Image (cartoon, rainbow, N blue to C red; front, side, top):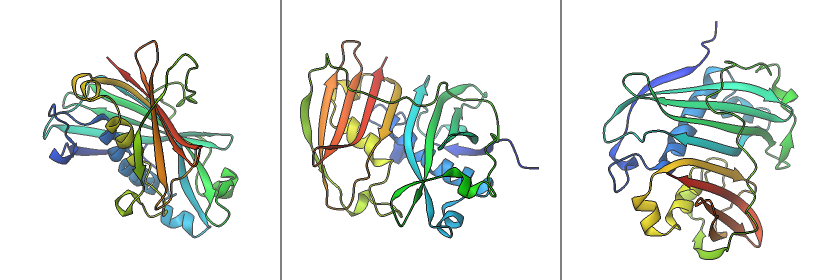
Length: 247
């Protein structure tokens, strides 16, 4: 019988720490990415299997809520599970627990299948012989699903620099890795915000892939409620947008 979650013990490495000696909020998404890979292997749908069908997973949205950021060499428990298929979307949830089992970080992600040859979305029915549309675990770490993000009209947006996608940004799907975008977003916020305030929630939508050599124009804006929006544009088209909430 398949376990209802994938779980592992993890020690926060020093290279994921920020200037406050705590896990960078953006580095959580690096951890979640690897956790998702292992979770997909557990239920029989890793990229190696999907590639045999000319398919791969693509990440559409992420949502993360943070109660406490782990510190240097802190031992935590990581959990992830396939939380179901609804229409074309598959969801995967995550928890980071402290040594006493208390939730530190909770997150959810929304995924779709992509046909590698056509670069278009594929129907999940193409892998229903491998994975059930029923959840591995019906519990949700975070509800509702990661939301669609729209830049509020009452925000005054400003340019916050550019980023050229280089070799170190690429992954095995030959585009900028999804874990890079949260780092780009945090890097273009005002220094006093990024270094002095605590992130409580981080939402991101991935709308178009970024390829090697493309220049991403970064736009930032603060909404009246104090949260920050960062948008990445390539040739005028939105590649990603995120909303970052500070406590």
